[in-house]
Image (tube, rainbow, N blue to C red; front, top):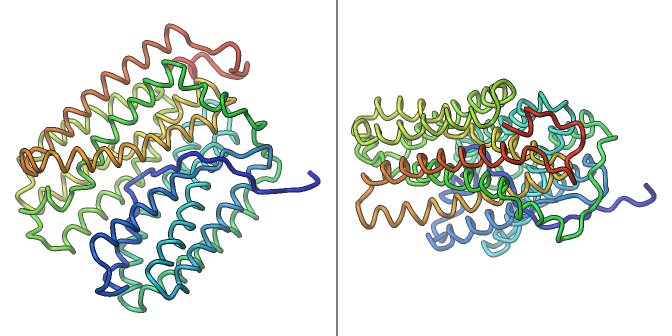
Length: 394
């Protein structure tokens, strides 16, 4: 390739696992001048930046991943150096854009490295890494910042980015080419497929259900935690730690029984946990147990859903994964809006019932998606011959 340029097109990132609260843990260290509205601004900047996904043009995927990691590293270094809060917003958005480029390309690359029957496991390995980063990153960042200051935390994260770049250079094969660049119309073509739309709809409703609890975890468990930030942090750490192992297990199970079966298990499990929630959220020990049980399936649904999407049309894997990522961010936004409305109307005690109803609706959508796939198992015009019957119908 005569010239290598990191060309990207806007798509969405993958917020698999609990959403990172890295920036939020730094606010007490930045200073008392950071108001709630400023915190919201950083949150929007991070989300919007992470909403940029690189659907690579015909560059090697390794090059795209390296570009994304470098952007993240530079944004983080900038955050450590900036003299004002306004510039911090800008550098955090740059870092988030790097993350947004990296995540879906990493998932699509993992799927491309293995045969179809191991695709679910490969995606799950990638997602497990991001879940682990979230589970341990926030408490480690908080402890590091408390000891050395928030700027030192940024330098620490930048150093971790360097380690990641070295890993990419050492471990990712050079010869993984991206699919040829597609016209914009073709990139949106999957949305004309009812199977894709219903699968994405399942993802939207399912993760809205999950993120209602995660977003309002402090309010839901107020009686159990007594308003203690440390107790809330332990709930989040428990959720994230369990999700690390559960996410990988979901990928393995997806390869065995298909995405539809895994989604059915996850959604029934989530719905039951949410219905039990009002019975146990008054005591802290019971709340910890429930959060751990909830985490077994709550953040295990992304791997089977991505597997289902890619199986519909492997040649458009990067586009389908980016659509999935966009839907996840929409789910986070909807969870915040619906949860806030639920608190205003029925109090925090109503959130479990609202989220459970959404989980049941997601299960119905998942089954509808499966029926549509059975009616038209393969897209003749675009699906390569390597797609198996099991892939096309799960």
